[in-house]
Image 1 (spheres, rainbow, N blue to C red):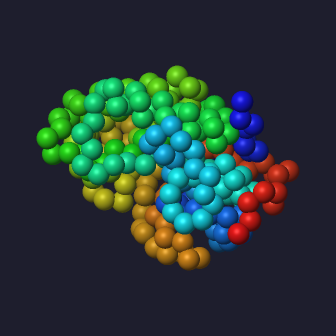
Image 2 (cartoon, rainbow, N blue to C red; image 1 turned 120 degrees about the vertical axis):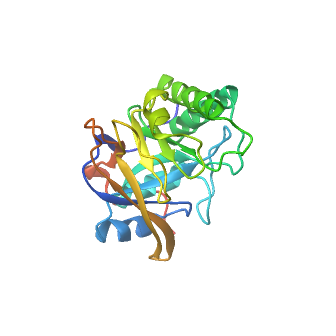
Length: 233
């Protein structure tokens, strides 16, 4: 059994953070934390595989997760999307199971948001197929004890009413592109501008409260563990 990451599951405040495909070390995470960033969203694989690489771009490793927390940033995982994806219910179960397995293998405790990225859906797919996929993904992730969240990207085939009435998610993250609002609930995380900061290409994200008082839950750094990590550049 994988040891849990050193951190505290915590409901987010109204804060600023970022998502990135670039792997971070402790020093880089500390630079962002010192500049007022509170959290980071990093990517995990679509297959049942946890990355071990610590440089470049791609999925998060255990060492990187430890480094980000030691650098002073809270952390949440999001699963990579695939362009022109034709979703099915079975794929939702498979990819959701993989997301949960990878989060657990990295050491994320139960109760943390794990995000599903839905965007760039194949033009031949229907809204119902996207709904079936997303709900199966959410079921697999929640069965493992995590909180499923949905990143709503462009060309998701999901409408304002469908997002609220037909999906089982309670945590929604809006992309920087124009996408439908979530009826009744709204969003609790908003992607903003893209930029290169401290040599890292990032999308800036804001978290807050949705219309039903919902917030994301992340793994926050343990104050007693700050500055301690096995991964340094």
